[in-house]
Length: 139
Image 1 (cartoon, rainbow, N blue to C red):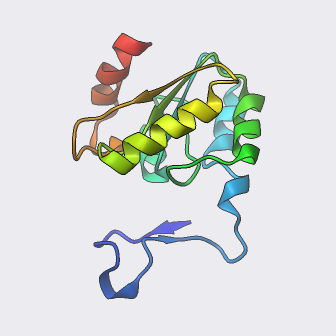
Image 2 (cartoon, rainbow, N blue to C red; image 1 turned 90 degrees about the vertical axis):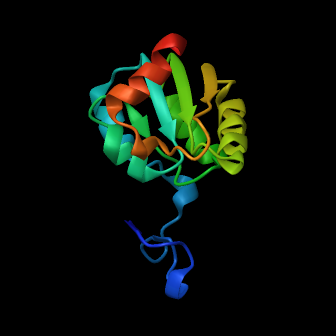
């Protein structure tokens, strides 16, 4: 997977580049590492895999590659059997709506909550300590 770091739409370059034939609705970014850990206390689901890359050492983190989650991805999350799920998306209206929809789709598995970030803040802009401060009262 790749991500263009310039402004979206610049020079007709797509923001995200995925391998030909890749079906993101069947995968969760970083799933294999979380499954290997076997720690089911809490799971953080990020909108973007950049946020997963930034925070995966501190949090059990995955991404559905965007603001929505498919039934197949819900099944993958269920297989991890987390006790709590925090859905952290970008601090904008589309991110907040997507986070609530993902949390709702996962509410049949376990406790799931959408976490609102301040306007304009993306999870990968935060340090892991800053994100922990936001999540700690909800933990």
